[in-house]
Length: 195
Image (cartoon, rainbow, N blue to C red; front, side, top):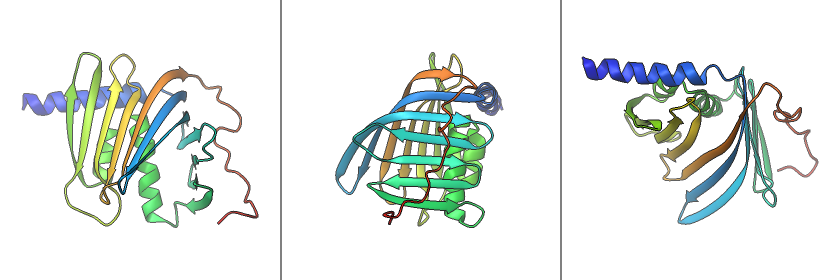
């Protein structure tokens, strides 16, 4: 019983502290490993309530991820894709997972991904591992998160897909502010050369 209460307290602590963030920006490094290849990038991550998140990659990469409410925009390797999450369940799940990971609502991430959750408290962080209960065609088999103990902000996220692809993000240089760049969550206009 004590173990369960400790788990619940740790989850509530992460959620309560991170839930106070109205505007956040940080630098990130991103390592993607898939099919035996590794790509490394960096950029800025922006988060704001309600339901807005974006990853602006540094040059020379042109990658961009924007979640703005129900709208999701992805630009990877020059290919642009747009989604309305009210009409696309897999994209709705992915965007909810990313938003809730950043927000610190780890129990919601576990529930939405039909997964088990394990929480470990350390001197400087609260680490959360979310493991899927059963294999699926899409989605994440394992999500590893680390939140800073001092303020509950997400500092590390590793998303392992059922396909074996791994996306690892490390966040640094946090700025908590309601004043984010005006275009932080702007979805670019459709380009004539988009695929």
